[in-house]
Image 1 (cartoon, rainbow, N blue to C red):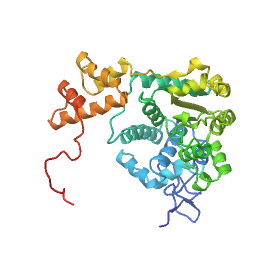
Image 2 (cartoon, one colour):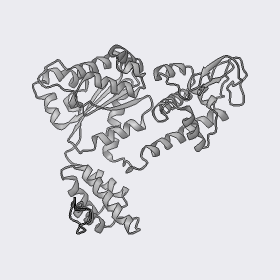
Image 3 (cartoon, rainbow, N blue to C red):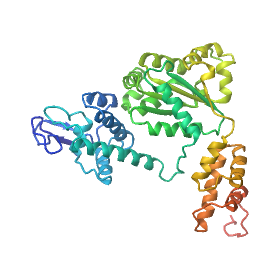
Image 4 (cartoon, one colour):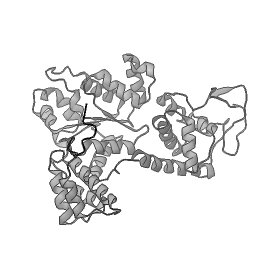
Length: 396
């Protein structure tokens, strides 16, 4: 199928401010065209604010969520009441608007205002779609603390552009960081899990994929690094979750992944957020590698500037979670949540059993969870295999 749309570079803008008269001069549409995001962003630097920031967000949304398919983006727009053509998105995302040939939008005018309203609508849509079929994310006091912490290190005038968060497994670190990245995604913040093997090449590939670097560059070291650096600047943030996996024990200062993160941060001015488990803190500040990691600790603002998650979910978080599930944050429900949060698995156990309690309530056509549902969730055990009295199917 031909995916080329012909656009007359000498055409006159229509009512949307874009030229769309067919001619022999053609450009590929945004649909099914894999574009480098750094190049796309450069192409809209002449757009006035806040249109430019909104378009950059939309560029990354198109690449991340729509997989580079402009028709999918157009259909989402239609669903939200923003009925525009493929050519509209093509011109807008590829930098053709706000030029003498392709027209302008008046500041505060109808086209300007409608587009900004659409961006707010699609951001809300993105949040809901991200959580579809999943348990809704609950913004606890811990989330807001992490949000403020990262925002401080992301500010352009921040002295410390490397930050560290640590806490035990099951303390909601990963869920909080993924939600933060989702809210600040599409060009500003990327979140990656550190590779299990700790290898720099794999870490770079994960980061490059988040910036939608071309497949050829993904597997060629020099091209991969060049492409990553092209996408990084002082406004970008990389969150590396479970970064303790990057540490190669017994290698001393020969730590390729950490060395590269330090170098790329210094060279580009980006912000690097490292999340790791509590036991890795001992490696950072007291273990054999303490001398090597002093350079990281210093750039984090000192060991006392690490954001440390408590061993167990704070009572304030549990109260917010209880209210989100329609429970009275009184003694009865809180006793269950407090006890569950201390079990192996910690906050995961809390959400798992609340989900069970919801299912028990729903099975009886109730919308509210009762203390009896919480007790049933506490006592629930999966049915053991082979305990059914029915002997059918047992013979070989």
